[in-house]
Image 1 (cartoon, rainbow, N blue to C red):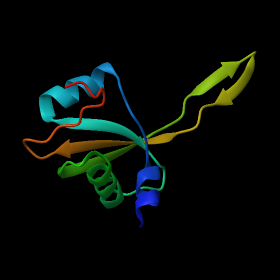
Image 2 (tube, helix red, strand yellow; image 1 turned 120 degrees about the horizontal axis):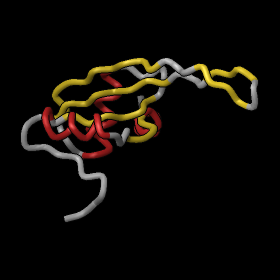
Image 3 (cartoon, rainbow, N blue to C red; image 1 turned 45 degrees about the horizontal axis):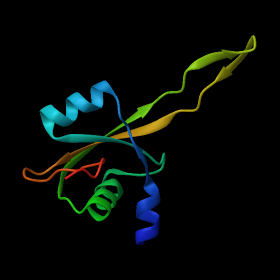
Length: 98
């Protein structure tokens, strides 16, 4: 895969209470990723984008929820989540603060 394809695999970081606890405790970061991405592609994309070394990647598929919209049943689409663990001494700073 070329650089442009790798970068499009990562959609956005997941910022939640759970992902913040995981980042502090296990040095892992959580990303929404493309539904067809695999672990090796995600590892390469994170290393290239943030210039860090990745130690492991765990993937989970999040199922969409059934919801009601104006008394009509509907379904949200599912998505893929990746937990990226960094090697010791590496960190990702999303805010850019120094």
